[in-house]
Image (cartoon, rainbow, N blue to C red; front, side):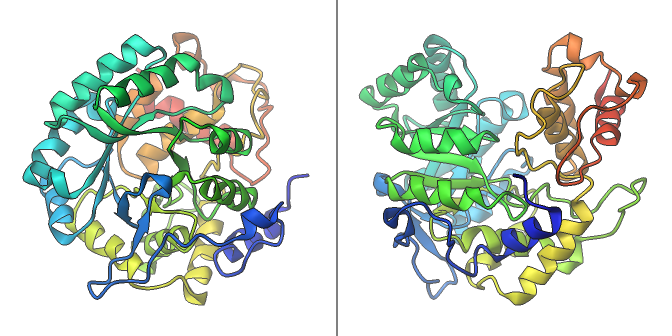
Length: 388
């Protein structure tokens, strides 16, 4: 049964402060010993599961970064994990990341991803990624954006294993935006998956604590993305929940919440400028506390009508057959992160029979979010914002 909104809020924000009482086994209860205390520099490190890779608990998600000097500065300051993908910025992100890291490559852990659906295309993507990044290998290569067990095909796993044998990658991973209740336990038991990159933030259901713990205890490296829960530093002025959020510490508190889970080995928050870089690095030196919890409670109320938690409850409930979770995620790129081109690009990748639907003409929305997201209004906004 889906928890009430109030109980969900209380349970979710309490997770970092206390041990979960609902973990299913003794092995899942054992705390991870992979995170270290902050060093003299204020940096905190963790070991990425059985890979043995040592990473800073705050890494760098390069997806929306356009200024290579921010990436270069992050590496100079000591961040050791950088994440990109073949599809980011129409393929240009990898080239920028490779140029920015330059001779720092040997000092950092570098990952990229493929959204290919078959072995041949995936291996072609990998060769292109290596060329663009200016490196002879990736430390981690992810199968990108998988939300079901069926999507992690033997063919794609074979591609990763072939790349390992060829010395083009060191470790194989899978990234997922949703479907974690079933997918993460499957990946935890998969002998050929080394690292899991998953959405994880303070808005998500409490079961995420358990499935992440299970995967970590199985030796998988755990990387958290979407840790800012949409990055709503500033809500849209035409939204009734409009407020300026940048100065109340919501983004820093959200990042501190994510890394306070010892089974999360590193995170990949997006950073577009030096100010965000400096702010995010602070999360490693200052533990999540009661003040942060209060900040996130306020943030939860503000973004409640806007932010899709990708819980899967609405799957199949749209009478038009629209992929509601995906479309709301694309809208978050624009409204939350300020990345309109990225949101529109992803929207237009959908089939034409979906992009042509107008929710404003629907006689009544059949999708009811258990967490209060105003689905119909958000879908209409996405269509008006992104449609040609």
